[in-house]
Length: 290
Image (cartoon, rainbow, N blue to C red; front, side, top):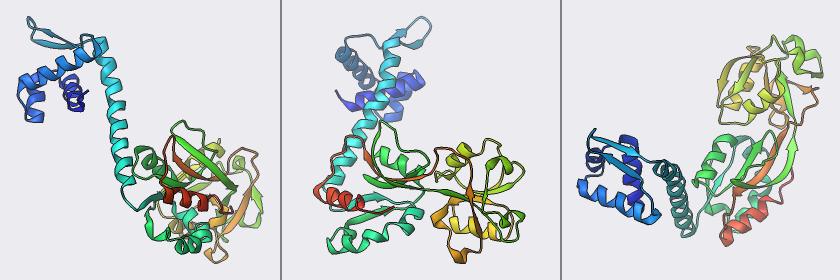
């Protein structure tokens, strides 16, 4: 099957006009027609019906089914190209969230340097949620990700290293600062400073916060969250380990008994075959203590 034929067909379904498809790809109209005929021969079914009387191009049910599957076929082909191209390079395309990178990755950095693997890393640094999308799309091959629940997705293979608790952080000037723990039921009127959707924190927050407290500001910067909380402009929920004594905020344990924590996992795409160096790197990641 010619993948360009699928390109023409998808465009024809979108606009239902042979002339427009030909112009879009800078080819002749007969070239588009021949591509559709090749696909119809391939699948032994009529994909397009041309209504000459009403000057309409109608897509059959089989055509709509092919359109849906063509998107998946082309996505799989793009992923195959990316993986094969990556296998020809010495670099290891690795996703690392800032929180995990700061807290845990230094454990193995020296060993990676000694083994010549640290120099091969091409690190993409952003929140776990965004890195998960990049991993599935083939933009990175390995990631060290956080999740508020253990991974259970057919698109990835994950090995959990451990889990860390979330905490509520408040300013020392906040009335809650005298407490050691609190439940979300008592925070219904509180104003929260939150991280944006690149991170897993918003999902964990929703899992905890059945009372739906107000989020007055979101930011991609963890240090900015802590600074705003320190200034008593709101409270927040963060992984407890990311809060340091000199941050000037107070950590409160969360009393709610929910199966939610900051799970840390080594994640690859389902079915991905690592290179020898990538496997050595994964083996080192699995030795981390969380």
